[in-house]
Length: 360
Ligand code: SF4
Image 1: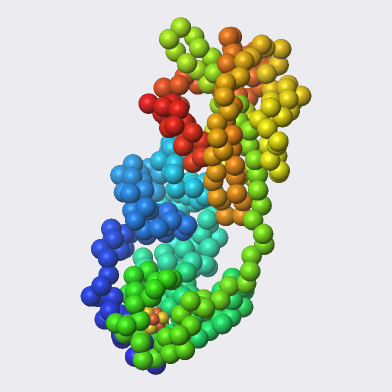
Image 2: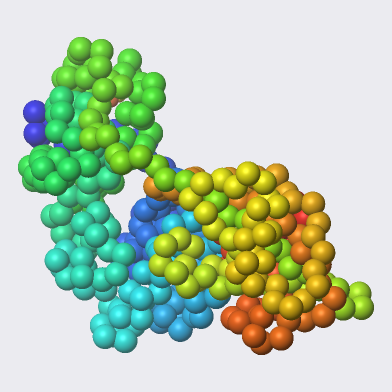
């Protein structure tokens, strides 16, 4: 099956592959950049971001010299901002310690921030032709279905087993072609729902197809329950002549959205009975100091699903007549409304600002 498998797969790939800009380049920087962007993002969405980044930062030196606000701003909408953090850290290491040249070795690549087994294997094989299998969600699905492997893919044992299998299967082929063909086959043909088994090149040898259990593969161990978090945001607004200003908060905690901007808030693990309770809580926390404030109508709930957390936010407009003094302001930034667009914010806040016409 081994040689037959690779042969069929690569022939299929040559006929059906999508033309993606990083595929033809073989430039390690472009491959690394595309892989970081695509880590939790679909190709269609990631493509626009890839072009944006390559245009703004054509090489690792330019990227390493960019400010974090600039990069966060370009990253906005992609989510999982720790990828942007790691992108900056790795760019600086490659630019300063490696003279701008990505190392070829899989084990060395893995030592850089944000580069795990998958990304290291992708850079090593696609850019440098190293025999290193790239095992992503598509690969798990294709191999588990064809060979009927029921080891859960989100376990160490599963990862090892699938990597070993892919390594064995790729033996006789160019690593870049084999890896891309296997991923592309999962992305386009052996898709999660309704795989096209009728016209499949592996139809006669596929275990899942022979027993009609395509949707049972790949097997995953159940995950821990998803948590909830509620934010009551105080959108503090100051009108000065014709201009409107708002107070923004730069998030520094490691929990979620680090280095993005939001509003002063009260945060809870369970929903409050009403936004009035959050106003009382904000006053207890001395969020508005000695200042006289008035409140607008709270927004409906805005929700965002993160990996292990569902976040719900209610926005409460707060009107003030004079700027806060340093004691009340603390680290908040007073930002003119038409400058808000320059501050990277979580997706749920971007939606609120858009609904309020505050991003123009
Ligand atoms: S026969 Fe169906 S399940 Fe099996 S590899 Fe082909 S598309 Fe996937």
